[in-house]
Length: 154
Image (cartoon, rainbow, N blue to C red; front, top):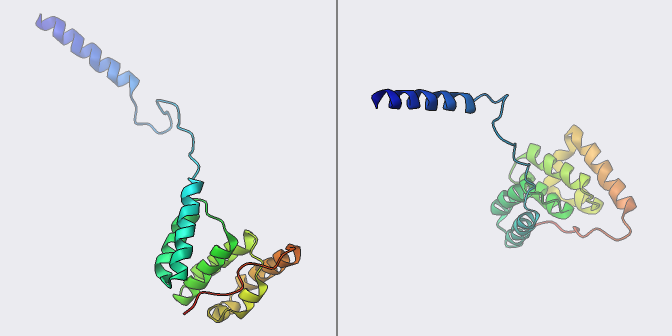
């Protein structure tokens, strides 16, 4: 009987050794499909960030804009406002990233871009000309006036 248990144990160990591997080059099962971000969650986060922006809770709004961006939120006006908030917080690099995103997504508020006082220090950066040119190009294509004509209150 003892011999039978020994044989079963060896067979079991041999079976385990041949069916499992930690080698990342040889996965053992099908790779799960990539999941798309939840767009409804992104829209909800973006709307919540907009509300926080209206309430003057800028840092909280920027935090939610970051989360919404990661989930697929791409509203150009909101991206512009995230850039304004980042600029007011003293983060020029992040502000330029948000403004570039806004321009890429179709932001067409040339007046808002030019008249927002917190964006003036950014005009010295090399990315500014590219962003301004994209916004101007968006404005020339836009049949209606841009929605983002005012900026968040101080």
